[in-house]
Length: 378
Image: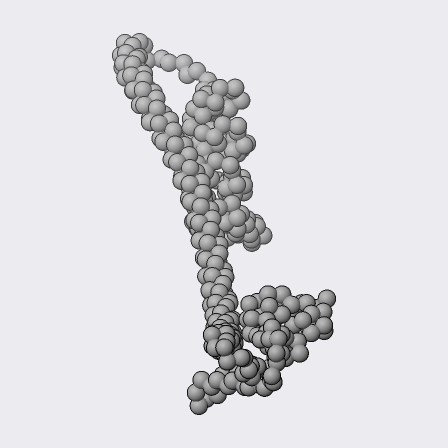
């Protein structure tokens, strides 16, 4: 069931009261039965004084109109009963009835003005509320746009920051790789330096050994000179007839005894044998020294590569080219020095270079050597 509300007291008014005439709808305003009775009316439009009066002389209707200004904001018409004829001896009752009618009219006028004022306030409130809602919607739209802009800027900056971080990470990885390569190169250089220092120490010991050997030889020669002088003196004292003894010539090289030392299990003995064979300056020792380029000891291989260059035999060129691929930088260094001495060629072979570069230079040496074998020089 539909429920209305009184425009004066805001009490609920069921639709059934409007249908039964207990409540009224005046100029679009709902007025409940209570307010209607206070205003002095009834469903038939009669006043309370008409009901209470025992003698009703007549009734008349009067209209009370109230205007609030030229604008016509408020206009109210109220129905009041006409004056009632009372006996002349009841003047007090007549005055009281008149005052009651005036009070009812004033209450109705004030109620209608209050209703109009409330409607005006409602309209102003609705207008202000609509403006606030519009401002709120506009502000929300601007905030959404600003949020989208800030979000886009944040995404752009975060994307750039991610790219910068990735670039820095790649640069750091490249720096680390270069540092590792440099460290490996330094380690190889340090190893080569240690090997060279060891070779120098061995060379110093070799020189000292040779010095002692020379001193011994000098002492032996001095003793031999004394023996020869004594022998000459003895020959002078003997008769002049001398029977010549047959001269036996021994063509066996004296260094053959050193060849056996090349097979010793002691690397020091093998190293001394290589050095002693090199001091003979006999190219015949080359055939015995070439296999030593594959010795298990680094210093023995290095000594063999160095000695072969000093002997000056072309038979050493091929094995020395193979020695350029040795695992020890010191052996590679001795081999390339001997090759330059024997061939007067320089293919810019670096014993400390990377393996790929060394392989290219070794191939250049081999190509040159094969060309020399096909067409001998001179």
